[in-house]
Length: 518
Image (cartoon, rainbow, N blue to C red; front, side):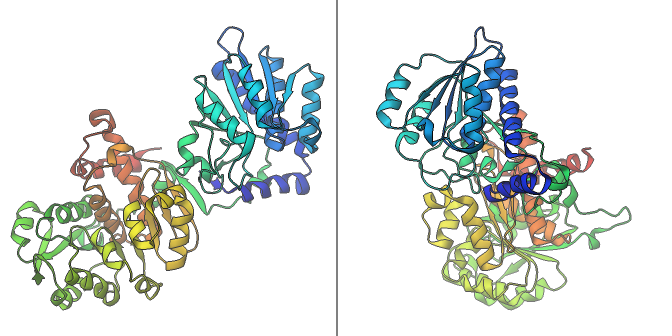
């Protein structure tokens, strides 16, 4: 699914109006009618349904006036509350406000908090509340009576329908601009926006429905595709081709550098996930003291004992690792490596000295903290970093809360600045490219929030790199398959108590299901 920024949607509207010649008031009519139809379909079964339309003074308010008129025509009791003076409503919104007045609509105006408070106190009960305060053009924090209105909407127990986007959500990033309406249903127009599907804004959207407002095909064909919500159709197109006469030698050989004393499980899961992700061969390099233990748990993975210091790989292992990397197609680095100085130095030297496509996670990311200039020296190399928000905080120096409040911008800016593919894990994991593209993942559920899931994802992405995918596609597909495997287990395991190994064992079935789905 294409995802647009607010600016891109405005450009679509301008081309439709200026180049094709469809008036903006027609688009507004189509939008409001489409939203009213969705409300009618879901909520009209109640006897004598009533709706309160909360409208701002801009075009989103204009959409709300159209919603009010169409619900009124369908027999609803409709009250419209405008958070502005009547004289401040201009353009197409003013035309539709006048039409609502001429149809006998009940309209009240509140331009300050005191007036708003009085009107809300006397509002009564409603079947549904409609948020038409702000549209996709909001760029600054909500304040004044609008903040008061949002707080009131969020206290109500009846359903709230957001027109285009919940007021207070930044349509271009998913940031919450001070406060946001928590909608039951969001009816957006023509295309979904980034803020609908990227957290934290996605948490305010509820069910998302996109309605056709008459954007011509000639304009739709010009809509950019640099931001996508990755669904099964998109993911399927990235699947590596499996030749019928293929053999293990042509499906990629992944080198995993992982593990330390007390962290053998991370290495085991990353390596086995490489095989379950489709790589023909996987070799795991680990400290020599833990190699027997790891080898006893991995019957299909080759293991290579390496020089160590205090139970972690040491810098003395560098030459052997570089030699071991010859003939391999990709490198997965970091799970369970440990945080010692020797291990950190080895990670940094291996990044510099190996030319393999690489995915870095966990302790490998910790070794990069304070050394991000290494990434810029490797700008032409396929490289994927897979931090969770805490690791992202250590990489960037930003507080975790600040990262979570603006995930989209943080991920995109890091990827562009450091010329890497950045996977910012979490709800609706983001995969950002050095050229500014960002994919938003649609698979997965809260059951993935448990230890070891990142190790499985690292091995899976490394496997896809070894099979010849680009760094961006390997990361995007890996994230989707990882979530899909968890989704397939949801009916049996629920969203708590799922183990990383459960997801790992489900990877081949998830890949097969994706390939077969029509």
